[in-house]
Image (cartoon, rainbow, N blue to C red; front, side, top):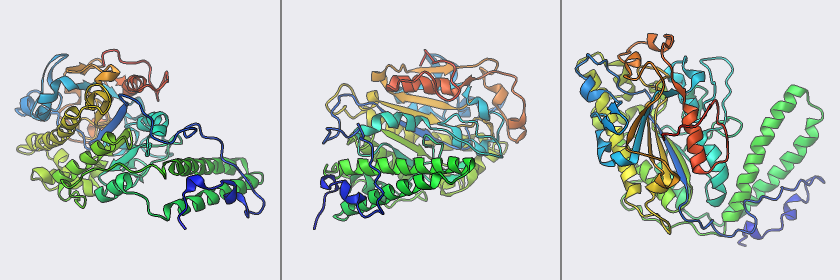
Length: 467
């Protein structure tokens, strides 16, 4: 017999559980709603992370003119180098920023800094590890109630990685890493393939098991020490998070999946074919946004320290491994080789931006890009240096973002020479003789323009009026 979980009597799951009955609270996210929210100009957000920093030669180096990542000039009067020149046709849709970083991690090695890119947490170089909620998940808490998936979490390597070795950009409210998906076929199936007939019954069984776990845990709590109660509370929060996902899945069971054509995609592609792999991942995000399957996405193109299959991405432009390029900048054509790889990354990001720009907003004003804010960047600049992050904002004009500019923040390193030419670990150990602003100032600005009501994020001190 085919059963739709949305039609099942919830009390049915609670009987036969040893007398325990713990009802879910009423979730306003699903009250009185039978279809995705209908709103014009839906706000979206996506973040993209590149590891290993970017080319930053000294001015006296012949490579400086062509292969320094940051543009020459400033404000509206800036010139893109060969690292970013694929973005020239999109000049009026982007803002490039420098002089921003997370204060809590400026003195940690660049191999350990991806974890905090979207959180701003003081994750530290070693010892106890504590993270916090990421920017995307804070926005997803608000907008995710309207879509089948609260957010789409992707990376080239997949999973979570390890503390200080993240393979995901996304962290929940407890600072726990959210596993990233990396297989295009599985991503497509999750987004666009209908559940089989057993899905409803599995959801019912999951809900029943969660009810039992919560009831049993509350009884156990009375006999635990204070320390163990704290650990139990953390566990219960993860159970409650799962409970909300189950409840949300019930709501969407009777709503058909969006239909899309992916005949142009090879969903079995892997990072061993890096250019087509990146294009496929970007296209899946585009389709997820276009169908309003989600309004939030993160994609970590690679993890730090050259571990994992993401290190193969440089093969797209004829190099063996990506991370090696950062260590070979002093060799003949070293900056050019590293810059050529960055050119490739810019080219594929630009293709995605242009795709959004060329698509009219369904039932709304302008293009999809006008209503989609994109963040592209890294938590490293020069060799393993967790300072002066290379950052690009794109899109979001209908949210009030200004573009066609290169914004320099901080004092004492406007020409980037204090963080240039570094090729040893002595760079990240060096004391800062210049000032940078908290990157969270940008994040707070972004959140407010995305419609999140908040006066702070991580260690923010103010918003950035120029953005």
